[in-house]
Amino acid sequence: MRIGLIGYQGSGKTTVFRALTSLAGAHAAKPGEIEIGVVKVPDPRVDRLCEVFKPKKKTPAAVEFLDLPPLGVSGKGAAERVAQMRKVDALACVVDAFSAGKEQEWKGALGKIREELAFEDLAVLEKRIDTLRKSVLKSTPTQERDKKELAQLERMKPAFEAGTVVDVSALKADEAKQMRGYRFFLMKPALAVVNVPEGVATGDVAPGDLPAGYLGGSRICGKVEQEISELPEADRAAFLKELGISEPASNRLIRAAYKALGLINFFTVGDDEVRAWTVPAGSNAVEAAGAIHSDLARGFIRAEVFAYADWEAVGGDEKQIKAKGKLRLEGKEYRVADGDILNIRFSV
Ligand SMILES: Nc1nc2c(ncn2[C@@H]2O[C@H](COP(=O)(O)OP(=O)(O)O)[C@@H](O)[C@H]2O)c(=O)[nH]1
Ligand SMILES: [Mg+2]
Image 1 (cartoon, rainbow, N blue to C red):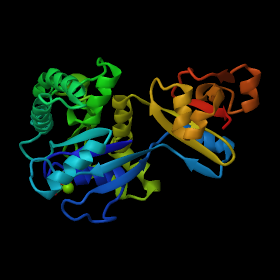
Image 2: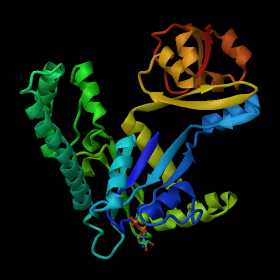
Image 3: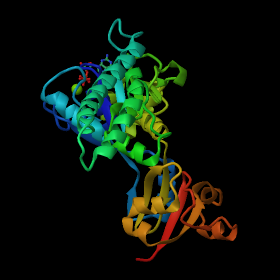
Image 4: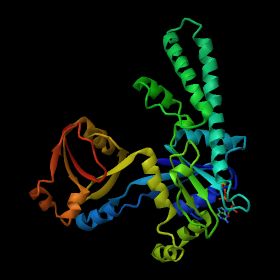
């Protein structure tokens, strides 16, 4: 999963990025250059599985954060930002609530970001509509398809003008696919990152307090979190406790992103590797197999499944899982649940 940090210059994107990815000073990016940091998704279940299976390799799920050039500036940075923003799975919108006088303005600032995104999407949409209006007049092999696409874009336009979330889930599969192909910003899940001053309560923003278009949000103090991320790992917990912070902001933000994107984790276990895999909620066993390797999806026979919670309940004893009838054989249509431990039987 890739999450792009966006916002206006000085909102604290880079500070938050450093806090999330502990990259403090690792590579001082030139202005306009994009830094990418990989964060392992903290999951105590992976730790516990490793304690028992003692694998050679531990692979938690990972999230990539991108520190993108600021909104509202033109030139090379803007083009790079737009190109990168098309490729991310979610947007984390950072707003300044730490500067004097800005403490109460974060909601308006978040709304302004949506307006900016809507403006950029509308430019793309209108350009495409103009092109299609001309092309549908000519008798070409794509004329019928162009007519359909034009009608579709014109139907969607009011949603873009409203600047809220553009939802394609109600469209027919082929129409939804075409709309997704544009990678419009308003179709991406957006999270709010309210960068508050030191000493102010942090935590999740209540959904009712968020402006339209945001699926979740966190109040974090970028500066303090960055300082924490620079500490040796062993000292972090004590420091967090002292500050009354229950966990690092990155954990909260990653959880919010999983929720907003509707993602779950399943696990594979063994002597070689214990690994967490990320798939959309509702994925079936074949799709889960495909996340591991396309061969596993192609040659899928059955999935052996047990739930992490059942395994934990019997003290991590696999024999007990079998004895208690908690090991199941599931077919292609089985819907994978968060925390499932899968072993795919396949033949290619
Ligand atoms: N007091 C305070 N200052 C911050 C915080 N986050 C960022 N800053 C400061 O705001 C300025 C801009 O931050 P930066 O992360 O570079 O913003 P960017 O332009 O969005 O990348 C820097 O001087 C930061 O030290 C914060 O949470 N509290
Ligand atoms: Mg920056």
